[in-house]
Image: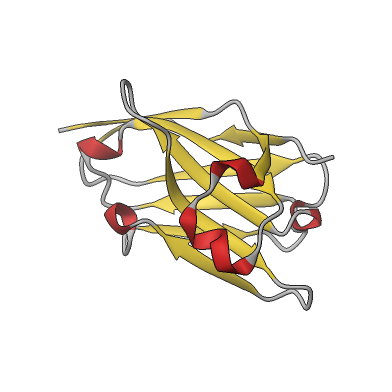
Length: 130
C-alpha cells in the first residue's frame, strides 16, 4: 500500500520558490502513475503534473499549461520521495497541493483523471502573495 505524505508548503512572495515533497510508505513506483494536484478555495481540484512509469523504469511527465516551464517534478534515487520544485511562483498558484498515486494507462495519464489515483495525501498549503 502506498500512503503519500506531503510537506514543504508555506507562504512566499510572488517570484519566489518552494519545493514540495511527497513521501510514500511503499515504493512510489509500485503504482505506475503519480501526480500532483492542487485545489484553490472555491475551485475544483486540478492537475499540476502527472508521471507515467513504464515497466523498464523510464517515465514520462506531463505538466499543466499554467505551470509549464516553472514547475519541475523529480524522484529520489530510493524511489520513495516525489518532489515538486516550483519557481517564479504567482498568486494564482495559491492552493492546497496534493500528491496522488495510482494505476493508469499511458493513453490517459496526461488527462489528470482523478479516478485513476487511489492513494491521496492530506495536502500541503501553498500561499503566494503579490
